[in-house]
Image (cartoon, rainbow, N blue to C red; front, side, top):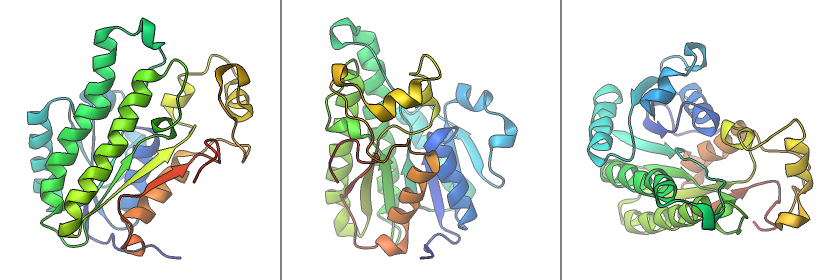
Length: 258
């Protein structure tokens, strides 16, 4: 099936300097969309120029700053025209037990994963309601519904993000705007590999760990960023024109749910 609905459409991708966001930006550009990609200034400065897809416009933005987000979105529309599609993939992880998590560390995760998401989704949503067939895909996590040891701040932020997206979808449905969630499991991104301590990291994730109450991955493999980005393209496409407020789990069966 050939996905369509991207030609000359303007799309904003957040968290675009690596992993899922980077792959989504590249695939959207290849599909004919006019892509504006954003990440933090420090992340963009460290990004190899050869990793930046051709013809993608890059903007630095700290999503924790509501004013900066509004300025970034305005600049994105100046570059690419009225935004009608969005992929929100920005986020950070925390692997500290809740009893050891400082107030500052807790706030850092919530400021990016939840408050930053609110800034982006509110500002972008106001643009989307003015465009026909507009759609937004938000990258959450299967950890939004599965308790994880030493990941309480992250799980809480992703649970809130999932509900934030679905509530926004309910509000924007009257304008014909679709808002959907993708909940990836373990995916070969810098966020995932940064939690591994040796070369056995992938095998441990796939096998699961009874001691930490974590199931393995029934499909026997990790997701790739392209696996998640391809699903995002489907949810943005004309072929998904009657799908909104969905929460699509892409985790190889790790959470034993659909």
